Length: 67
Length: 264
Image 1 (spheres, chains in turn brown, blue):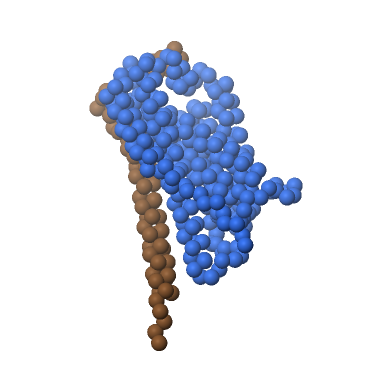
Image 2 (spheres, rainbow over the protein chains, first blue to last red):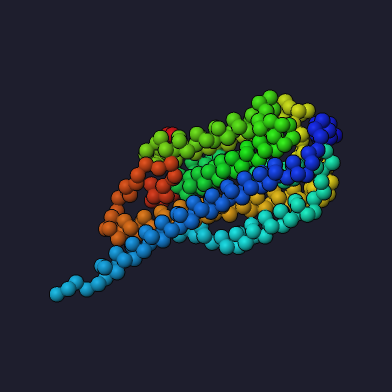
C-alpha cells in the first residue's frame, strides 16, 4: 500500500523513455563485470609471464655447464 | 624441519561455480524481460528494481560478512582469513558502486533527479560506501603487514557492525518515505517475487564467483612469489614485499593464537 501510495505520485514513463534508463542500469552491471574480467585477464597474463620466466630460469640451471 | 603448510586449493570448484553463475544470470535476465509483468505504476522502468535491490542487499551482506571473517582472523591470526575479509569487502565495494549508479539512474527516471539528498536511504547507503572507501587507504597507510592486517580487521568488524545498525535506524525512522518493495514481498505478485529471488540468487552467485576468482589469483601470485624466492635461495626469513593494500599470505608461517593482550 505504501509502495502504491509513493509510486502513485509518479506517472509511468513510456517505454521509449524508460528503455534507456533500464538499459543504462543493466549496462552498468555488465560494464563492471567486464572491467573486472579485463583486470583479471591482465593479472593472469602477468602470472603466466612470471611463470614462464621461472621455468626458463629453471631450464638454464638444469643445463650442464660447458667444459 | 618445518611442517609444510596445508595446501589451499582456492580454484577448486571454480568452473562449476562459473557455469552456475552464467546459467543463473541468463535465467534471471530472461525472467526479468520476458516473464515478469510490467509494474502498474512505473511500467518498464521498474525492471531496474531486479538489479538495483539485489546489488544493494549483496553489498551490505558482503560488508557484514567481511566483518565476520575479520573476527575469525583476529581469533586465529591466520592471514588467510584476513585475505578473505579483504576480498569480500573489496567485492562489496564494487557491488556498492553498481548499486549507487543503478539507483541514480532509477531516481532520474522516477523522480527526475540523479540524487535526492533528502532521501535517508540513499544518503545512509552513501555513508556506508564512503566509510568502506577508506578501507583500502587505511591498509595502504600501514607498512607493517602484521599491524596492517590487525588494524584492517578491527576496522572491518566495527564498520560491519555499523551496517545493520544503520540499516535498522534508517528503516525505523523512514518507514513512510522510501518505497519498501523488499519489506513487502507478500505484496509483490508471484511472477515478480520469483524473478526478484532468481535475480538475487544470480547476483549472489556472481559475487561468490568473483570473490573466488580474486582469491585464486591472489593465492597463485603468492605461490609464484614463494617459488621465485625459493629458486633465488631465500627459503628462510620473512619475504621482502613492497607496500601494498592487499594482505600478505606470508607474514605468519603458521596460524597462532594471540599470545598477549595486545589485540592491536
